[in-house]
Length: 208
Image 1 (tube, rainbow, N blue to C red):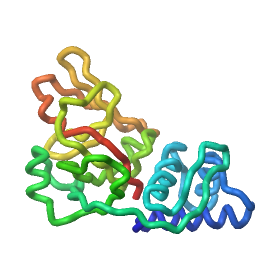
Image 2: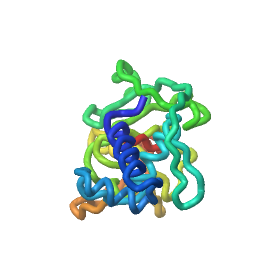
Image 3: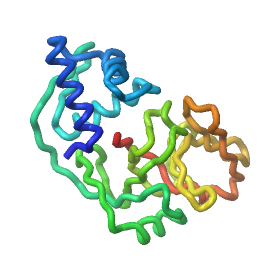
Image 4: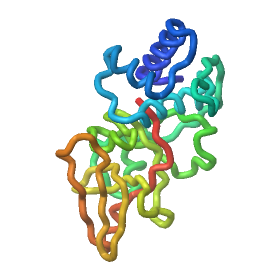
């Protein structure tokens, strides 16, 4: 089932198509959202994430052409994954799941091939809004750092709290970089000896 915000996005999309007789471009949908009470949308990627989420749930279809959005009524098999909130204290990925396994999020099985050990993490704040991750969104995390490369989005344990940032390593320095329209957010620097603080890699973004 779509989230409350996804339902709101879908209704707004329906209204646009009914009014204009065609589906919007990403830019037009961004402008339409801003005109209808969503506030400033920092990135076209935010619009794309909503469309991708609805496509995974069988509610829209997308083609590569400019106005290639089609409304659908479909069902897709879902998978439950553990849900962790950023407001909880975060140790290792194992501790995260052990301490917070009473909540789950339903995710389309088409979204990711292997759900083993994957968990969902709810993000707070606007430090990654230029990467299409807004306050209240969830990300799917695959624990472990072996496959993490420069430029990947990661979940890290900083000050006993989970943060999602862009990963970069230069020599002995690990940089956790914000991707934000808000200049208050600054990079976080770790030593390579603290690499265990990187809990895992973001493998998908789920819009709220």
